Image (cartoon, rainbow, N blue to C red; front, side, top):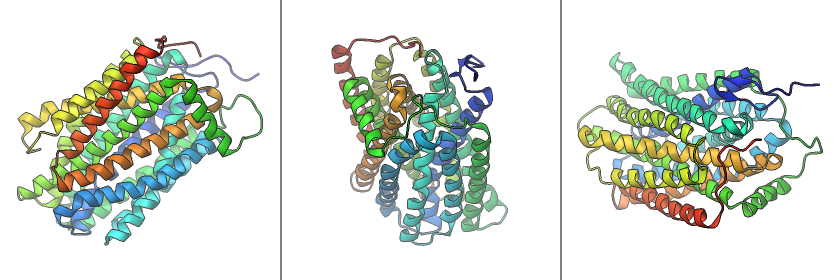
Amino acid sequence: MTEVIAKRLGPIQLTPGYSRLNGVTFIYAAFVTIGLLAFISFIQAYLLNVNLKMPPELQGRTVAILGIANEIVALVLVAPFGALADKIGRRLVYTFGFAWLAIGFLLYPEARTLPQLLACALFFSVGVAAVGTMLATVLADTPLENSRGKLVGITGLFQGLGVMIAVLGLGKVPELLAAGGMDDQRAGQITLWIAAGIAALSALAVFIGLKKGSPRRDGGAATSLAFILREGLTAARSNPRIWFAYMLQFVSFGDRIVIGTFLSLRLQQTALEHGMSMAAATGAASRVFGMVSGAALIGALIFGVLLDRLDRLKTGVFAMALGATAYFAGGFIDDPTAMKIVAPVCLLLGFGQVSAIIASQTMLGQEAPISCRGAVFGLAGICASAGILFTNGAGGWLYDQVSKGGPFFLMAGASFGIMLFGLWLLRRAPVTAPAVSQ
């Protein structure tokens, strides 16, 4: 008989059948996944200015076009990847995703025109869909229910570290290379090659360390993709908390676009206006971005603890209230380099972003039925892609045509609306305990 006793990874009880190596590998994968995805958003302004030499007044809508094109592919693929993972296992899909990202990082610095950059974004989004879906699905599979909040908190901590190290570390590479006499274009190319190497090594790591097979419990034949997707919709209709978790996914991925794309673009454009070189502007922007990531690290730990002690729906409502406040404040920043104003807003933004991410992941893991968990997370991925599409499209137009604070006000309004739905749901649906035996 196979192992049935739950092992522990520090304070976390793992699902029977999962080893400590599986748990450590997943935490590493989460660290690298979010770090690399944050970095590619951050480095877009560098590519637009150095490789394409695009005028600043066109860059907001351009990053929106790139983001929309990217997410259209992800929107099509994320649900099939969730279904595929139910059939062949999470490990193989995650490995494929990292390998695909590695190739994408090699292609990006070769782009010299907008169509070429768009083609790179479309290619890269295949890997984004694979690793993004697997990150959420493996997170749901790995812990016992009474340890879910702890693992989500620790995962959030390492995701924040991944973002901070990727942006602060890789974001400083062009500046360091340029200081040594290298031209900006070559410096950017080498930086993206380093990212490709990290993705390739991560593909090998998850292939070796993640659990083999799929956690399907029925042992029956694989169902059709259409049936798996219907299971996800049925689960949401029967449990309104899953709808709320889908909404949290929508806004949490929109948050990432505002911070990773529009805040980064705003910081780098302001630095260029102050007379910095592009490499120096990228380095300066990475430091402010690191402040947001640092705040997210602290928030991940706090919310991970809260989610094992409080009702998770109430915590999700609080996360939306915090996010609405943070983005409303962020929209009023005129000069992103004015640190006396930026520092407290960065603290709010980091807390608001990570609270939405952790609340959505934890609620999905708690509420999704084990028999159709891959389908539920596939639909959650569609909601995440929809959030990215919405934020890119509306945010890009607002950034260029109305105000550079427009994307922030957009997310403040979305967070406030979801908060109202959560309050209504609290009145309608009974409160359940946060840690039910799995």
